[in-house]
Each structure stands twice: as C-alpha cells, then as structure tokens.
Length: 289
Length: 250
Image (cartoon, rainbow over all chains, first blue to last red; front, side):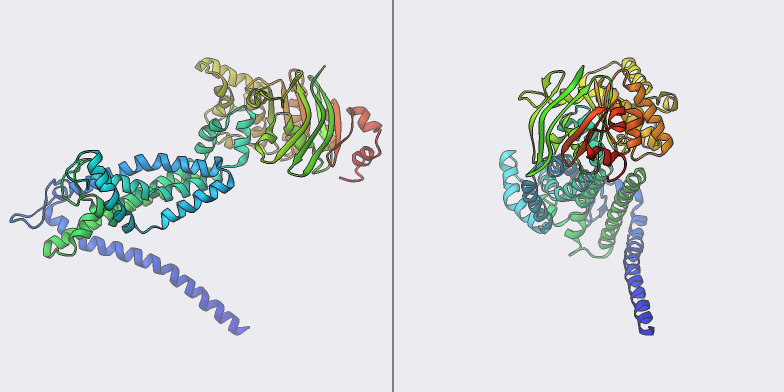
C-alpha cells in the first residue's frame, strides 16, 4: 500500500516537472531573445531598424535597416498562402467529402510523406529543378528569386493546411449536410455553403499554421531565394528574416552579431502574434459549439 | 387521392434486405404515421421517399415509388427536384450554424434569386407556417443555435416549408424534445396537414394515435398492417400489430 503511494507521488511529480519544463524553456528563450535583442535595437533606433531600407553591416559606415527582410518574409508568406490555401483547401475537401475511401487513403499517404520531407530536401530540389526552370521560363539571369521561394513555400505549407482543414471538414456534423441535401442542394452547393462555413474556424487554424510555417522556414528558402539583401521584387533575389540570421551568424561579429539577435527578436514577435491569432481562432471556434 | 404510392418496394444495404415488398399508398393532406420497433425499416422507408438513401453507398432499391404519378427512381428523374417537392425534418433538430433568417433563406436561395423584400416575406411566411414567427421575429439575425431544442425543431420545419414542398417527411421529430415542445409540434402538425401531406416516423404510439389519420406498422422490413389509425389501434387485423400496440414487445 505504501510503495504504491510513493510510486503514485513520484510519477505525479515527474509528469508535473516535464510539464513545467516546456514552460521554462519557452519562457527562457523569450527572455533571452529580449535581453540579447533589445540593446542593438536601442542603439540603432527602432524605426531606423525596422524601416531602414539598407542592410550593410560590414561597410565603413554600417547600416542596419531590416525592412527588406521583413517585407521579403511577408511577401513570401502572402504569396505562399495565396497559392497554397486554395490548393490545400480543395485537396482537403476532396479527401473529406468527395474521394472514394481507397483514393483518399492513397492521397493521404502522399500528403503525410510530403509533411515528412526535411526542408533542406525541398530547398535542394527547388535549387536543382525549380530555379533553372524559373530562369528559363521567365527569361531571367538568375532564377533564385522571391518567386521561386513562394513556389517552394506554397508546397511546404500544403500538408499542414490539408490535414487541419480535412479534420475540420470531417468533423462537420452529418446532420448539417443531410439538411442541405433534403432542401434540394447539390453536393457542391452543400460543400460550399454548409460544410466549409461550418468548418471555417478549423480551416482558418490550418491557414494560420501555414503562415507560421512559411514565416519560420529557413533552409529551403536559403537555397532558392538568392540571398541578397534587396528590397523585394517578385523576380529579384531576396533575403528573408530567417535567411539573414542563418546566413550571417557564421561570420558576424561584435555589433553585427547583436543585430542578428534583434532580427531573431522580430521573428519571435511575428511567430508569437501568429500563435496568438491561432489560439484566438480555435477558442472562438470551440465556444460556438 | 394518393400522392405517393409504392409498389413492391425492396431495399438492400449490400446483401442485407432492409425492406421487403412494401406496398403503401400515402393519401394527400393527411398524416400517415409509420410505427414499429427499432430496426424495422420505417426510417429507411421514409428516406426512400425523397431519395436520401442515394447518399449511402451500397444501397440498392427495387420496385417502384411514384409521387404525383411519376416514378421517382426512373432514369432521368432529378433527385434535387424531388427533394424540393418532398421536404424532410430530422430526428435531432439540425439548424445550420447560421442566423435564423439565413437558415430559412438557404433553401430558396438554392433554387431562385429573390429580391430582398420577397425573401423577407418568404422567411416570415415560412416561420409563421411553423408557428415560430412570434417567438423569433425580433431576433432573426441571431444564431439559430441560440434557440431552444423545440424552437430549433420548428425552425427546421420552417426551413423545410421554405421551398414549398407538397410532402413533409418527419423522422421521429419529437424524440429529442421535452413534452411541452412535443405538444407544440404535434399541434403544428395538425395545422400543417391542411396544406401538406405529412409522413411521420414515430416510436411513440400515443403520438401516432393522437395525430395521425393513417398508420402503417412495420416489422423487420415488412409492412405488416396499414389502415385508418383508429381502426389499427382499436381492432388490428394482425396479431403482431396487436402485440406491438398493446406493448407486448418493442
């Protein structure tokens, strides 16, 4: 009897400590980012830092404007969402509502594989296949562009969007759809006017997840986006927030290095806002039911 | 005048036969109650009348059903047009997660484009038809899910009325409701039969006796007995019917 209570207590404590561990780590990273990111921002000035258009950390008169990176991250994400969401949503609808079970299983396996491919492989394939293709099709001198990054990202965010949206669509009560059919709606009408609206909070969650993935992606875009600190153009080489950190950390020293931490802080705030949005969406969706 | 007739109607789920040679006539502007124990095929039968079983894979139907004299399973018959004509109310109130107004407007919007005032008019008529207008007229923009269960079910009836059907199929419409709400729906059904043909599946024999004009008793896929409700309940011809309605099984 007594040993049982001891085991019970030990296990409870272990679970508790493991639960706390994630909080401590997250909180620790947050504090570390703020502490190491703030000083450089102070020195440069927040608006010069965020809205400066020139990034020249190693010049005689170094400049640390990260607007090109911010805009690149934003444009690349928006582009990826614009392409990935329609395709992802349509695939989710196909899987949840249209496909015969066998076909759905096959597509599902493919989606899972897509999710499991390491991002460096996406980047590698993008570099070997996509970049030359973009160069030839659009007659550019260099195919490593924002456009290539958008294409690669839009594929990378597909699995997340598909899985979350499909789950949401599959959870739409059958009664809603039956009511629609019973009123003389066709299948497409029922999907568009009943199923998708009823699943909209789940679909929105999938989209926000995709945004998070696209903003945070580093390895794949480094290989296809050209990595040049220009103000972004669709067919120009660009550098995103994540690329700036990953690409320069290896050689940056002194103040330059501190600025990279500040970029990390900006990225951290981005991701934080995205996750807050996600939580808000999920909570509101949950409250409705 | 019979609006729906079935002739030797059989239905199979894969190799399982759920309905066996059903011959039943459903007269216009009367309430026909389908009774019988769980799994007897009464709900399945109801769902053949607006081809809702089409949505289930592996269902095979033989025999004939005519509505207004037309074979509803004939080649070229449009199930969409049929379902507009033969409306349905389900066991569990299932309003869409939209506003009260949009719930009613959903069906009409599928089939025609109405001007705003015409649509408002149609929504009001449908809600009045289901005796719900006075309770919701001040909150049409509110979510339908904010209504009580009984109100939701009347909303579903109003929604079915919105596409002007001739026939209303009701699949145990009060089984999820409290007695007071049930009574309201039963009163409503009495009024609905002045304009509509109602076919109701019910587990509740008192309900069948109270509201229906005709009763059909199903047992394990067979139609055992059908006739005027007072006759079926007071002097059933079949021993099995008698056993069921006197509560000896079920």
